[in-house]
Length: 247
Image (tube, rainbow, N blue to C red; front, side, top):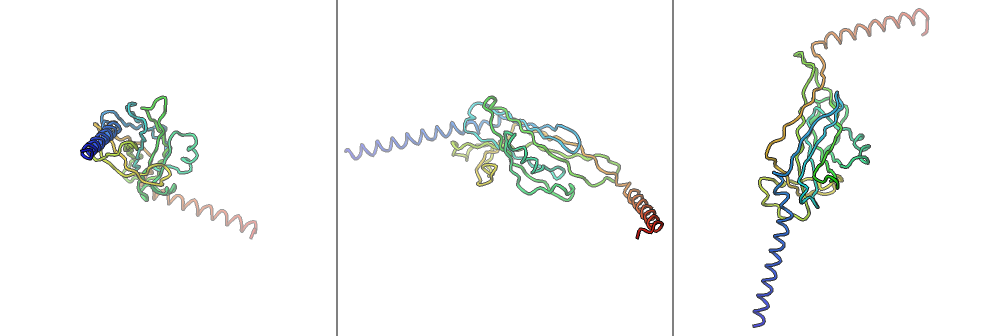
């Protein structure tokens, strides 16, 4: 008799704990599920010329942000690059950390390199926890000259992917329309975590920057002029040396 009562009581306690755990997990996952309606991501470009700043603004609902980590995944085209040394100098003065997926060659032109990915980990501001603003300095690469009379080329910058994560949300299987992806847990790239990639109701439009390119039709004239000037200088220098018997 007592054994039956004990078994029933143990079963009830177990079910109660599972229900409480499920409700707690549902509460912590609620913010991730509502991300489609409560978040927005926009980008804009400041400055002019080859050296620009890409400013990303993320607006989140301040409700339920406790314990939530934010990750911005930028997929950059080959027409621009970031300077790792410049980013390192900004590390102590920024409220975000950045991780590069590959080494950056600062010298190669756009047509001889490929795009790259950066992982940006912003720190939530206590005064405005629902607003994140990150400014990343970028630089334009040199492009091939144009043979059709174009003086500028356009480089398109897409908005970053918004990824969210919280240790308290463990059930990540039913978060549609969002998807679960693997990404580095932090900027030190010591481990990989599962993140929720937020799908927005409206696709954010890209922004573009205009970079000057050379005029390919002038290649022959420039090369010919350079060769002619070089020959004239060599002849003048040789005449001066022979006249003054320097050698």
